[in-house]
Length: 412
Length: 150
Image 1 (spheres, chains in turn blue, orange):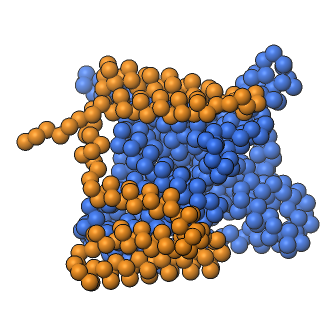
Image 2 (cartoon, one colour):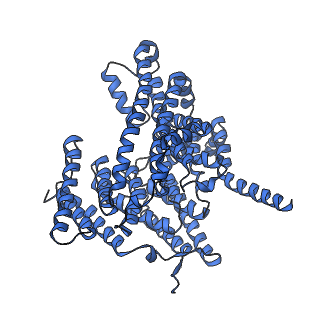
Image 3 (cartoon, helix red, strand yellow):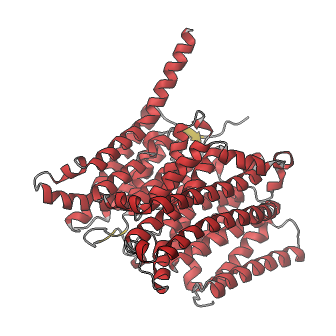
């Protein structure tokens, strides 16, 4: 969008969408915390496995240019996610004799590398250019109004993405990255112009921003209702609540209802405040960043990627992996591989593997001869299988429908 | 006008996929039953898709601009500086490597020449380093690598 001179509109839209996603998530938390936590409790290893497969099925939608390359990239991501300690059994795998790899690959570092380093290389290709060359003056007028229209003018996308974010947030181990991918894919699938996604289609931005903020409130559901912190930030809040003498869990809503509901309501305030700060800071920062020449911008971004990937675990190996994965991402993208598919494999790999192995262990309790049968007999698993098949086959179905429509048009 | 050189991206892509699968296959060890299960299937799948890509490259190739066409000297320079930066970060130290790397990336692309170029690049590198060092080290308490030279 910035390349089209719509950078300001993008920032405003992201801010409004984030605020709305957070507020919808808070409503979900306020009214449905206890029933949603009960549904989440019914998710066992087979359901987590199928949830991961459902996520991986998105590859068929995002790899329309080359499905084989998309699937191969997904498998490379799955393989990289297996570096480190095995989720069941505790064996150290694929450490290449480097002790720093025994803890596994830090997903955020790899993501930083995969998405930032190729962009840094592209900036380095022409360091003398500036972003202000794009004439954005005519596009900037009315950006705020368009941002609200982008979010509230497409309520189906906004609400659907918020619900996806809230529900993904409830599932332990899942997070904003998965919610983003699912919400983006669902919006792309629902869109009449899916080919515009990734080329400045603002509804893709609305879907991702709405869902990843709703995740935060979703993650509070198992924490408050069951006492299960499903993500690192939820674990920190768990600690903070314990420090205040509150014990998260089923009794929290009856024993400390006033404080719990005040805590939940504070999310409304946080999201409104975040939106206001987003408007003010986003506008200022956008104007500042756009004025910085590319020759200064790309070394600064590289510096931030080095610092950011190191700061996560204070592990220099994360910085090296960040940069190497950036080079891999650059080469793969140039060869027509979908880097989103790699990322999907990397994020969903551990969830899929853990669900698969634990599911088989569970299956042994049902049938020693056919332990895999457990993956196909539970109602939630069946629903997820149907969703996965639908998600994987939708691009082919859509293509068939389009061809048929074109033929009909030609016949008329 | 000379025609830009095209490459068969399926061949190169297939080769990369196969190399990935073989590197990981060589790292396979007699782990426990549950640890070996998933990697085994994924490696087999990768090998299959690598071969499919090679076959596709033979039958219906996807031709793309050579990687060399998309890569120029300043990108290669950034790549080398970046690699040196991340590999020397721990042994040399955060402050020294970051200052040198930032200076090395800023200096060649500075529009002025002579002393203003030197002072401008060094000043900007030092300023960025100071702000981010203070932010991460002092404010966020991140223990940055000290190495042999800080």
